[in-house]
Length: 344
Ligand SMILES: C[S@@+](CC[C@H](N)C(=O)[O-])C[C@H]1O[C@@H](n2cnc3c(N)ncnc32)[C@H](O)[C@@H]1O
Image (cartoon, rainbow, N blue to C red):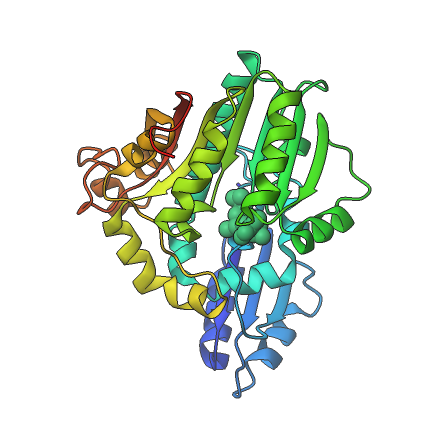
């Protein structure tokens, strides 16, 4: 068994000593214990430093404030490394950086629900694998962030993989991964996906260059207004070679819960959570996309044995498949391109 422990600590000097006794008593020690000191004034950092002396597996990080939406997923992907790992992302820890660990530690709700990132990543992996087996010649990852699939998935060298994101993100990623080689043909294109002219020109080029494209978006449209999501959907559907679009989706009830829990930190970071259509995946139908599959992250995480006992009980309830706005639901949807949007 391999595992890591992240301990957010603010003025926990006394408790940290007690916790260390419990950790040192484990039959199998954690691979890493990361103590995140959140501005303590009671000597927490000194206690942590004493514990870390001579124990290379204990690290201390200091929170500098602020937050960021893009670092949570890589932290979870980095921790998904045990014997029964569903996927192994060897670069996630490096890409998340200390900042990513700090952010994850400052968001205990997100940590408790790390199963949802794991389920999402696993589900999207499955769809991509299937599409590639069925002849996809291009994957377009919208807002790819720190995703490392071109490096970690078994992909044919002939597959073209296009990562789109904002310039700073792609520059950072390029720097960290400069020495690594992707398994397929990777192209990074810095584009602001809210810039209609820029994205249309890019989609036109890619749509002409490929025959069978799968578009991926994870952790993107939840930050869009409904109108922006509709316009993006319409621009994608305009290209017949863009056959499928796999995206995560959130119900209005779950959006409310997320806004109450992690939403504040994301507002501070300038990335408020916004999009959760009451119609569920059918939202996209007028813009040229028919929903052909929905997968609940909760039910998937149950199947993958990633849930706590309490969440397992919840997963026994029927799957609303994203179509009941008053039920908390987060999932991955596969949409099929039906041609031109119904409205222009
Ligand atoms: C929550 S992260 C998700 C990253 C990645 N898809 C994943 O699942 O790990 C959101 C990503 O969207 C990117 N992003 C946000 N607004 C964008 C925009 N207008 N155009 C392009 N990318 C954008 C951010 O830079 C960030 O990498």
